Length: 410
Image (cartoon, rainbow, N blue to C red; front, top):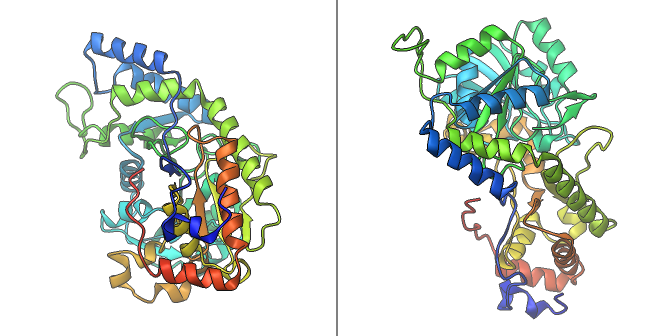
């Protein structure tokens, strides 16, 4: 525990943690079972092209989320691109700006214009009232994003989409193994897209999936993600290469066997963070609805600078110096990134809640790589900094300045 200002790493002290603690350090299931599967696929010499592990993985995921079809992908971004194309989206599609930039890029890459919508200040999800206001004659669809794994207002979005004749799909990158109203995420809208990237609580090394109850859509996606092949040497559709390989599927099958353990670890960590940060002025830990099935993947704070006496960015720099690589998702919002900022530099005027969240949100380490003692130490660091005098906080602000953090790769 650090007790003196000069002990902070930004002022020359030794970092509190000897090794970096990442927000998305990968989880790993039973290593022995994984290696057995890898030996199996090596012996078969069937590494890709819809192998047995991929087919089994798709079946297991479809069963888990209670949908008829799962189409495994090399990553979730490719899944978004293909499902948008398969559904015939064009013109403009309404999405939240408070999301990972892949949601917007998947549309822009196909010359579909993402129209950025504000989010609800409490849920951090796309605001249906704002969606209604953003619809124009050019609008063909809506993409809701289940931010932090907390589901969108699926009912309101579905009502709007049906009434206005729009296609509704969901970016469920954060929401694998979560429910809304007791119903598994995966069966809402025309389709939902999961991410199984290494930084997600459930990973396949790299990968994703599109899940849907629309059999015709699933058949089209299977053509599209394999160059349009229907059988041997029979190309019947325009396609690309979006397939998941056997090694990734082997990892997915192994991690599915440990899914509940991953969730329980995250739940334990979430409760520890909430307990340790309870009552800290200027810090709010976002809440999960524990009556629903949640994956508790993200530990997200909102930092109120007026109450805390330090900004979110100052606190983030201090934590980085101590080897706590906290993340400021989704700064600065998609609307503030290129090419979107140059195309319409005034988006920010339409997105007050997004702008506010982008200056307040801070995500902390979670998953297998962190334990209760480390959580207590991280929280003690935060409480120590927020408990400093105004003069000491001012000194820290001067030292940190306006530096940008180094790139965090995982």
